[in-house]
Amino acid sequence: MEYNYDVVVIGGGLAGLVSAGILASNGYSVSLIEKGSYPRNKVCGEFMCLESEPAIRQMGVSLSDLSPIKIDHFTLSTVHGKTAKLNLPQPGIGISRYKLEEVLYKRLLELGVDVLCKTMVEKVERDTAQDKHLLLDQNGKNYWAKVVVGAYGKRSILQLPNLNRSGYFGAKNYYRFPLTTNEVQLHIFPSGYAGMSNVENGLVNFCYLGKTSDLKKCGGIEAYQKQIVSQNPFLKRLLNEGEPMLDKTLTISQIDFGHRKRVTDGMLHVGDAGGVIHPLSGNGMSMALKSAQILSQHVQRFLDGEITRTQLESAYSKSWEKAFRIRMISSKFYQALFENSWGSNLAVAALRNKTLGKRLIKLTQGKPKNYITEVGYVG
Ligand SMILES: Cc1cc2nc3c(=O)[nH]c(=O)nc-3n(C[C@H](O)[C@H](O)[C@H](O)COP(=O)(O)OP(=O)(O)OC[C@H]3O[C@@H](n4cnc5c(N)ncnc54)[C@H](O)[C@@H]3O)c2cc1C
Image (cartoon, rainbow, N blue to C red; front, side, top):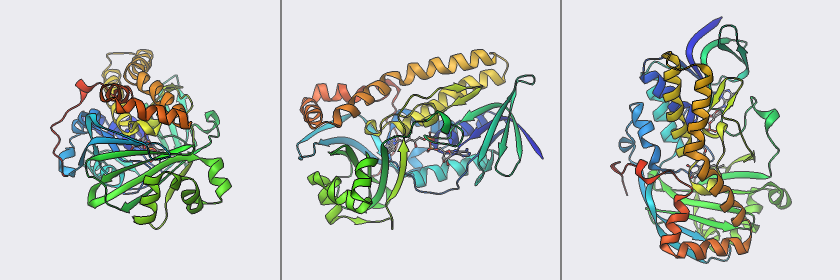
């Protein structure tokens, strides 16, 4: 059996859901293929910059209907608990991936997108004669697409040969714990850092990035949290006094921050598949949405016959660089800084100067003029 679409999107995280949503809203035939199902929890700090709210609005979903938590204060602490606090240059929101992805998924169904869950794309072949792509899933089904969007995240069977084995892992749990509602906190611990901020239902998202070698030395997540994470006094307090909500802390391994291509063999990459930003920036979700929006604009012009495939690939790559290059570079630099105790002391000292602090934060985010502020909040 064969299926034909204008666009097939591989992967239904934020980047895939929004790419599919915008293109379907504009009348193209779209299928989204996702190996998992909805709703689900994901390892993510769930602090979202508002820069990309228009991308969600473009597919007919209003963030204000989801009652996000407004977050406009930031605290950074070193391993020894030295802190810097400042107002964020632009507010963000706290919202769980569980809720956000489910709402976007339901919207895709309303828009008539063929969403195939529990389906994994195993192979993508380019048919240059027909200027199309053929996708094969694990059940041997074939899908033809004029455009293929690779939205398969940080690590997928489709890109494995090009990835490095990375030394980082990520972990997340929700806690009941008193935390100022409008604040996102970033706490450094040896060779890692953890974010804490509120999401809906009065829960605190606790999410961190650490070194796999340290985890192995400790022999498991509980011991790692006790021996390594708890060296930061703020995190020690959360782990000792907070009540974990998920039975088991979620983890992901092998997070590779290495270079990714925006286009491979005609397939256009969005979200993490096109470039993984360090989580300390709190910008990966925003980049997933914004890259989906940028990509959709170029794909529409291609499907309408206004530009050729070569022009599509080149225009998308250039727009991606323009939108994200600076934040990718600055986040990489801050990550390197945080891995040394002198570096984290320096970062705290810099952020204590409010003007400099705001400038440094802005470098990891989109341009303020692109932000919108009229989203309705709770909290
Ligand atoms: C520890 C940590 C904390 C973070 N905290 C924040 C934060 O606070 N704020 C922020 O903005 N960002 C944060 N991020 C980054 C953010 O989570 C990612 O940038 C974002 O999830 C990227 O979305 P995506 O849609 O590109 O990928 P994903 O959400 O990973 O989605 C990819 C999807 O593709 C599917 N898939 C993969 N391969 C296939 C296949 N072959 N066939 C079908 N489906 C496939 C997967 O099942 C998955 O659902 C954090 C990241 C980490 C690691």
